[in-house]
Image 1 (tube, each protein chain N blue to C red):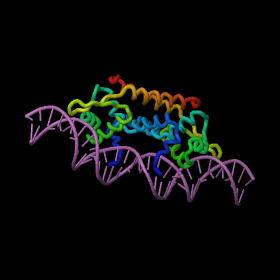
Image 2: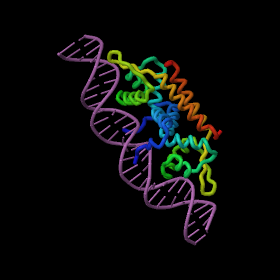
Image 3: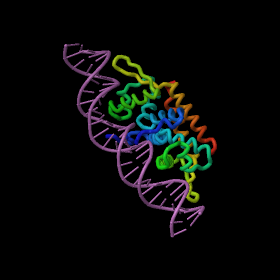
Length: 107
Length: 107
DNA sequence: AATGTATATTGCAATATTACGATGTTAAAA
DNA sequence: TTTTAACATCGTAATATTGCAATATACATT
């Protein structure tokens, strides 16, 4: 078929998979790493830093933003992207749970 | 183009992206969670548990195995899958690094 | 040898992802 | 008002992913 059968899995599993998918592309990890360093980043700067075109970078930024890991706000014609610490915390928790479950009996 | 430009990113970023991609499908998370619970699992049992066909389950198992997160051994006609704790440790470390970098200034 | 059981592989259709040029959109600057 | 700058979106080509039926492989049992 070609479509993931999400409905057969639990909600927390789907949630982790969705966030892992955001991190499943190196450009998006680089973006998050880079934004972590500044307190508000521009698409143009990010696109130069990670050496992808502006449209491609913008597209990745939208994907990360949709996941909740990024916030942004306009100031004039510039859009400043920022990490969303709360959502990053959620991600951390979900991974923690995953490791707890997966390590339960295997180690 | 449609192909990820891996070469423009650092090695550790690509490594984390590769492992995150393994976790980017709910079926693969469910499989790892399930295998964590037993000490050696059969494809047939896993496929019944997660309610995907045997070929689809086997395919996911190969993808996880290729990432190093699973080991397996044959015993007769049965193949027993097991978590690879070392590789799980690597994953944990990579995530830890990612969180360190990303949280550096944002929080 | 023939049958059954567990698994892997192949082939394919449906869909998703990745990348970028071209084209809007918006707001500051000239 | 025109120009410039920053960004988002559209359109599209190349490629990757997902899922399963059909088939192949390998061992165990009869």
